[in-house]
Amino acid sequence: MSANVIQAGGPVNPGFGIYFLSDFATLAPQTAANMFRETVSAKKARLKKIIARLDQTYPRAQCALTHANPLELLVATILSAQCTDRRVNLVTETLFKKYRSAEDYANAPVAELEQAIRSTGFYKNKARHIQAACRDIVEKHGGNVPRTMDDLLQLQGVGRKTANVVLGNAFGLNAGVVVDTHVARVSCRLGLTGQCAPEKIESDLMGLVPQRQWTLFSHWLIWHGRGRCHARKPDCAHCELLRLCRRIGVKEPSLPLKAGSNPGKGLLGFCR
Ligand code: SF4
Image (cartoon, rainbow, N blue to C red; front, side, top):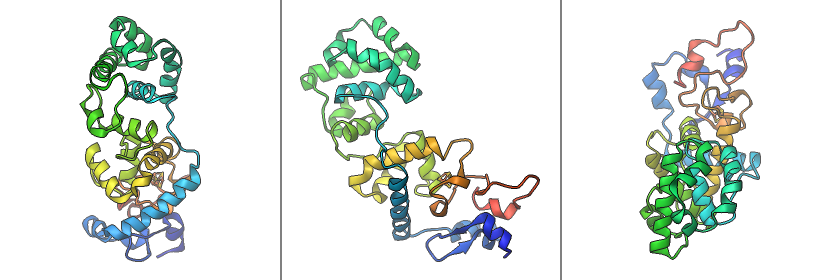
């Protein structure tokens, strides 16, 4: 193998010793994929290092939705669907002053609530979900947001992701792993899951990540997905996790290329 290729590709450790990307350049794709099969214990050992790097990189990772109590977080999370956290925080700054209890939301004229949250998009559905959830909270839970997964999932318009956000960040309970678009993308690229459905990704992550870190782990991946592992163009060249990442599905080279250079098919092929 040439020194050039080693430098460009960097060593990877699939759990059975150190290999270089160029070692796989001449293998059939299936053979190369098989060589990257990882035992659960090897994956957990790699994940332990990933977690240490994430903790070091994002020591202040936390929920980006501004909230002062479980109800505010529940509402903010419903509003955050297909919307940036920044926009949600702008809207809730006013919204939370006007609507202070589940009863306030439940009894509000729907047109008024829709207008108040309009700029978050899909405002008609979101208003409907907020009101339905708040009616359930008033009627079945005495006006208090329930603090168990089962009870939260019984609320209309509340799915597992929203329930996990509320339990983990408002109640400090690690009941599951929040799987949003960033967590799904980054955990797939890291090779921590081969699943596509959020609930299956969550199940894989719950089997690997220590329970006490479930909430924090999703914050780390969300921050990493926003800052480094972008959907369209992941910044692998500067990534803190490069040496620990299997870059599943990533076609870009892991180091910046010189103008006019060709990374070579073998270098990129195994990551597809
Ligand atoms: S190395 Fe690339 S694909 Fe892997 S986590 Fe970093 S940015 Fe994402």
